[in-house]
Length: 244
Image 1 (cartoon, rainbow, N blue to C red):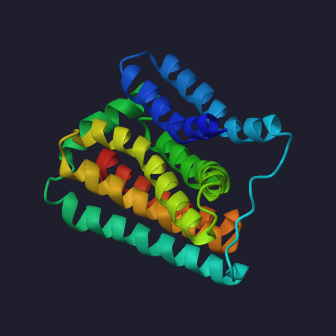
Image 2 (cartoon, rainbow, N blue to C red; image 1 turned 90 degrees about the vertical axis):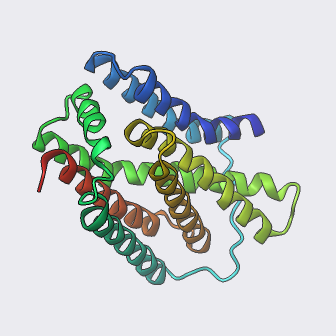
């Protein structure tokens, strides 16, 4: 089971390297095909693992006094608005005017062209898909399955729920950030502080979503939160590629 869990944690990084780096110069149909097949495999992995385990549910999360749904929704929305606002204000108010993101424009346009998404309409469709659909799929993958499964695995050696939850939040959030490192490095470079600062921020966001999911046990609050952050990121991307 541990090697399956390792595969779940690191497969997204391998997939990202394949379609973002290895196939960077491939024709659009190849890039799109690799992305589509790879993502289908990624989001099927948790279900395949559960089926192979006889459809047994992951170990339930012991979270003490759980957050009521309304409270969790407010926490998720507040974090999404705050983080999304910080992303937009930081980019438009500082990073872009200071020229700190200019090096990302060329690679970003090239990647959009490689996927035939280099028009405003297609970019908007991509942003809507990622913000609404893909964010939910990522929460299902990273929090519903990876975090919870890792929490159960840690509890086999450290029975205390708090230790297991903290360790699982840290481990799953670092794994969640790894494939973002690969993406950011293609835009800013491996040596750029922005690559590592933005990746660290991604890990912190993942840790917050793991905490929120652990306390509430529902995907909707973290999905809404993630969706708002993704919307802000795509708004910055639109500003970079197509101007104001």
